[in-house]
Image (cartoon, rainbow, N blue to C red):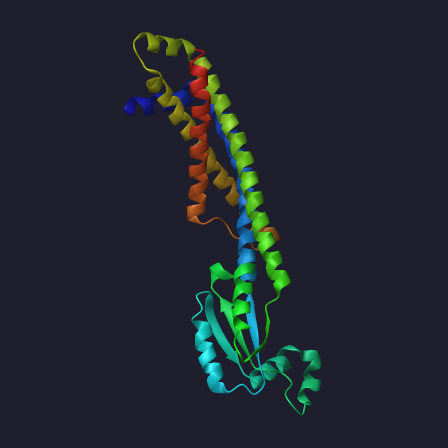
Length: 285
């Protein structure tokens, strides 16, 4: 194992310019992916913030006994999708309207009778805020005898779902594209390293070295290059995030786990790039 590590590290010493070029190229490939990742992270934060506002409002029939409402409220809170259910009385609804609808404050003050119904505001758990679950809960609420109407903004909930699906699909496509580019780059550098050491490899075969033994330093070399490229990419992404956060808009950066995943992703594609190249080109040496 020590021999494999030593041989992999010696490759950087033998061809420092080629190694630096390949690490830099990988870093910039992953940096572009990292920038897209930053956009995705901040978009997900924005979508999460909007999702937190997903709410179902069940308007109650006038004159519904408070006892029936209390029993119904417990039943609603027992729904597996429901995070919280809050009863809003007619008086509370009018008070809110006077506070929030400033332009109609005078009109609302002069009302002889409160026209606003009591309601139950239902907030769903994070994993149940998509259109299908919201519609299912709304349909169940309509089955309660004291519920007059149910509102939840079907159109914008469905649009939110489509936006989230689109963001996920674009993320997969872009990530796969840049991963492929990085694998090709690493494969090319490993191929050059194999050809550069062709005489040495031929001698190793003469003394009984197997292809697996010869291949391992190249695989480790590719993984190290990918690892270094991923680390540089995270550093560049942090620099871009600092500039954006300071001069443009308040933004979020990767969590430690996400940053580690980018570095690990670099190592994986480095290993894959080496594996796809070294086996094919060893046969020609």
